[in-house]
Length: 100
Image 1 (tube, rainbow, N blue to C red):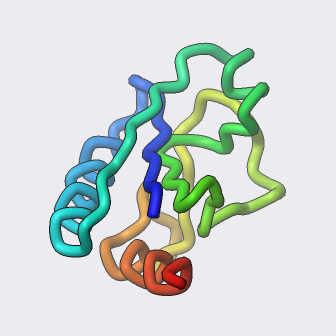
Image 2 (image 1 turned 180 degrees about the vertical axis):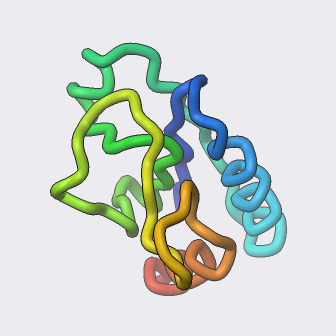
């Protein structure tokens, strides 16, 4: 399983997501690749819908096709409303769904 964390430097939530991914990776035997998105043009080229974005084998398990593309903080639907990053249970569920 290839796990990628895409972010931009102005996002306050990407580091916490990275820490959660590292802990989950240690438990489940996968590494995490980080990709910093630096320009609006790069965001456009890769369809970056905000930071932090987690990709599992290249797919975004939390995709919202209506979310704008660009250098922005991403919003997720959490159990109690909108949040700035996916929670550990959300990530665990995404990894379980992606497992062969």
